Image (cartoon, rainbow, N blue to C red; front, side, top):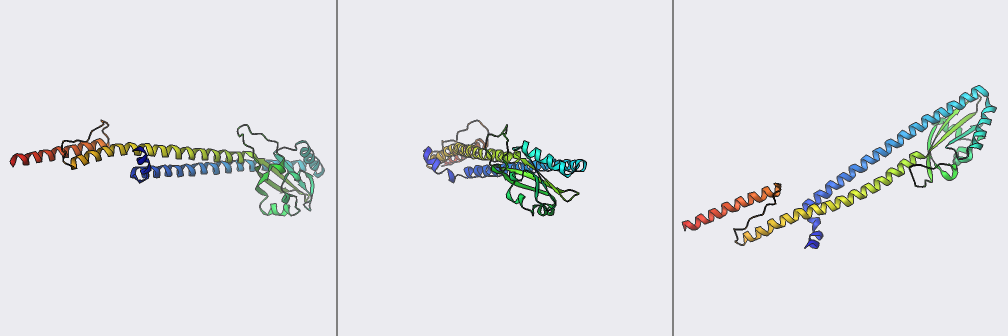
Length: 265
């Protein structure tokens, strides 16, 4: 009997409504987590761009104070001592040839002599994906156990007064970590909602079907002439109890009318 009910459970209106509500809740969850994902990503990008702007400003101030040669030496020294740093600097001459820095930690297009004009044309800002195989980033997350192969990086570009240009890149692994964490959380959350929702829909449908089967069974007995039968109440005072009370009152009235007819006859 139980197996038969489970096989035909998809025909139940209550089951369909419960599943529809569950799907609506899952959709709302997807939208909410998606919005949080995008908001967090935008927030981290803005913070990274703000920090890289400070990096550029520091290099410009250094250039104004000590000159081009000192800036090239400073960038070269930093690049040699911090080969796995999230900060990457490149100094270009007037022809956009690399003077100092670590261009090898950046994608190939950043080593092209046209990159200066390209970056200047877009306002000196670029957000891009950077492979860890290229960046050699030395970073271990305290909160994320997964191994990321690609990070998000933000680049700021500025021209100096002598025609040279400086590029500051900040690798932000937290952006991809947040994305991976939210995606994994969302997958588990949706799976849990579907399993719990489906189990709840089956349980509720079975509970409703059990009470409806009682009403149907008694209705069949009454239809076959047994007017003494009554729909049992479970004391919950819910819709089914109210329905049962009304049906029982109707049966009492019918039984009284039939009894009156018998007496008249």
